[in-house]
Amino acid sequence: MDSRQIIENGDIFLGIELGSTRIKSVLTDENGTVLGIGIHDWENSFIDGIWTYPVDEILFGLSNCYKSLKADIKDKFGITIKQIKYMGISAMMHGYMAFDKDMRLLAPFQTWRNSNTERSARELSESFKFNIPLRWTIAHLYQRILDKEEHVKNIGFVTTLSSYIHYMLTGKKNIGIGDASGIFPIDSTVRDYDKTMLDIFEEKIKDCNFSWKIRDILPKVMVAGECAGILTKSGANLLDKDGDLAEGSILCPPEGDAGTGMVATNSIAKGTGNMSAGTSMFAMLVLEKKLNNYYEEIDMVTTPVGDPVAMSHANNGTGDLNAWVGIFREFANLFGMNITDGELYEKLYTNSLNGSSDCGNLMSFGYFSGEGITKLSEGRPLFLRSPKSKFTLANFMRAHLYSSLTAVKLGLDILTEKENVVIKKMMGHGGFFKTKVVGQRYLSAAIAAPVEVLDNASEGGAWGIALLSLYVKYATQYKDLSEFLEKRIFVHNTGSEIMADENDIEGFKDFTQSYMKALDIERLSVERFDE
Image 1: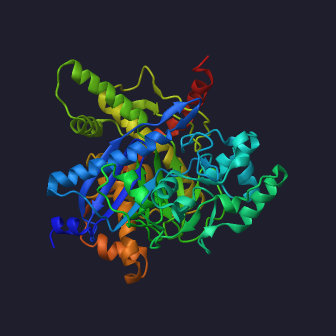
Image 2 (image 1 turned 60 degrees about the horizontal axis):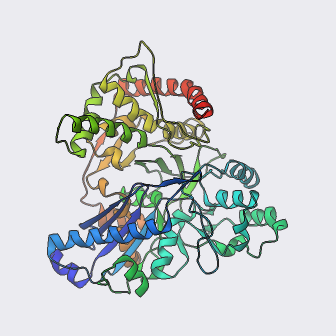
Image 3 (image 1 turned 120 degrees about the vertical axis):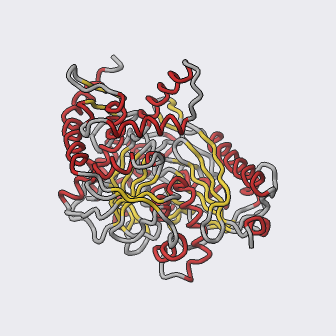
């Protein structure tokens, strides 16, 4: 059966991921082959000191992304999508969406970028003896309680973005275990929220006399392969404003972008790792065993099937780098140069390879927001050089590319140096790796291990959640998700692997040492910039 017939019969699988700067949809066949792609670009807003996306922008972006996918399929195959057998929703993890019992939003959606939860995260980490990062949903909820915000007493449901969209499509308050692990700590032995920690939390808030219990307001945890809901008529109309899409699609558990990144890079098995590199950066290693201690810089999350994962997460990635590329774009336009974004990034990234391995004593801090790993509650993008620095374009770009990776590297160094975790190989995906060789080589230099990028890595998490929807259909035919990916999806997939040379590895070490020394200047800029 050719692709046109497959689409006409509805034997197709849809994944939609709401990322920080882009909503992307991917349609595949039953082998995971991409049939069409939809895109909607957006940006978060900084309103009253909060990084947020208004609900109307979320829902418009969702439907507009689907509209883009429909147009792509129509253009390629001359077909209007009428039916989709399986689908799934993914989104940026963490943050805070609080609703009353009638699903009315009680407070502005706070995204993962908000770091206004220092007290709550610290208190919960001490009580749980488990690291609760600033961006986790439970940290946001407890901070709202500590701040005595009026809306808290009326809460009926607290969740993440992926779970909210899933509810809008199915009417079910469910969540995939990977995304759930960024809401509240997970007990991997039972594949659910940690019961002991739930009890501790209840004890901490008992004097508040809320009408709700924490167990009752969190979404139900589900694992990959389970049916998490059915697309309703209202859900279909929300996705497809033209009314062409039929109800009845089976949805997989909604997942976070960490879990879909693992799937898209075939990094589910124990001992594997992957790095998602874009506006934010995170590297994940699927552990053979639990860590001996807990660290503020390391998040403990799970795979979509519930296995423990150590994550080094940085709120800031390529945002400042992209802003600088925008300056070069303005320069090109000023001289009437017709250069595409792809050409611009490729030239600038590739030219950085001509720079010094230590970036010529240039330094960049691309902090648009606070950064937990380096203990900064706010961000101020900052570029530094001395009169003796080698200020060339190649070194300038290389410094920004290095800086995009350094906070994550500091977290990974804890795992390798204090827990003796061995990084055998890291899979890379995201915009950072679109230009061949460059991103791979620099990440390899940062972690002193080989880095592989698959040919389809640019499809990212939207493809990953499409594969998780596909897994719902085939879960009973394979031993586990890892075997499904290995034998059905990645059996013929090709990619490239790069190992940095010793000069690059030593250069990145030197850059990291300079980065650590210069952090005091960044802290000073946060304190004094607005004076």
